[in-house]
Image (tube, rainbow, N blue to C red; front, side, top):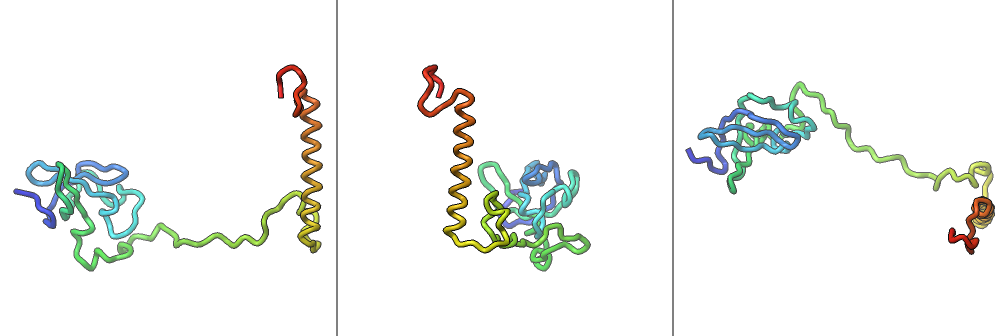
Length: 158
């Protein structure tokens, strides 16, 4: 029996992987059902829908290069193909909800103590520059105490 595109066949699931299921077909041939073609809903775990040894109806999607591409969901009746969830199964995925909007650029050390007092942009910039200069001078002093400097100290270290 020649397997042709569009044919609906029965086969037995012979193996399951993360990306799909292998189905033994008539005439000792094997095809694969990609995980996206198992059910009319999004699924994470294929093993929740098919088991090894289970007999399934499949539709042949493509044949070529020794590979047979199959679909379980396209072998279902049309009204079941368009279902968004199967009866008796709870939907596991939550609908997308965007993150709350960002209301401030962040809690920087130079802002935290003055958060409730209104400031102009220039005031905030001058405080930021002062804090940055203080931190840079602390870093420079710390580096010099360990024998590091920008000009070098004659021993090859920088």
